Image (cartoon, rainbow, N blue to C red; front, side, top):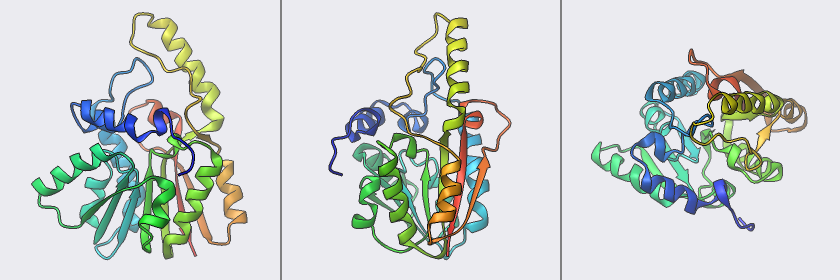
Length: 248
């Protein structure tokens, strides 16, 4: 990656988060915008259940999976038991070391870890996969050009009929509603922890982008866009969505 990454895009930032985390939720950077507390175990279980539900139709013990941005392994350790091989990548070394310790402790044999950023996936991993997962990582991409380049690389790495799962995308059309809710919550809780009102360091993507992609990209067979599944109403379920792209 040519540009210098800062803030939420920096490996050093995520290494710091991983080193100072008390659990896998904190290590993955799962903190609420409403007061800065980490999400609850129940909320993260709901997040994981949503991912499994969306991916389960495509999983089997013959499939090879690549995950871009595996972080603390919330997705990886739940999906890997269903597939033949799972390659978890991340740009932050400390989370990969945490994951490697768990892999060794639990004698997991089908997970391989690799340190690389999303834009290095074609160069440094490069194998043909049945499924590529990007779950809760695209909001940290620097801009739409970077996002589109990564999408193109992923689609080119998929086998015929393969699937690209892009989970937990921030819905650009709902950003004004989210900011309004955050502002109201901050006013109602003046003594709370930090409320994140500045979202300029995040990439918010319109659902309409994928409708255009389906028309323009010759590699795409089908695109399914869906709301998050879950009974707990929070920022993850109310302002984000998932996308499944199937290639020809």
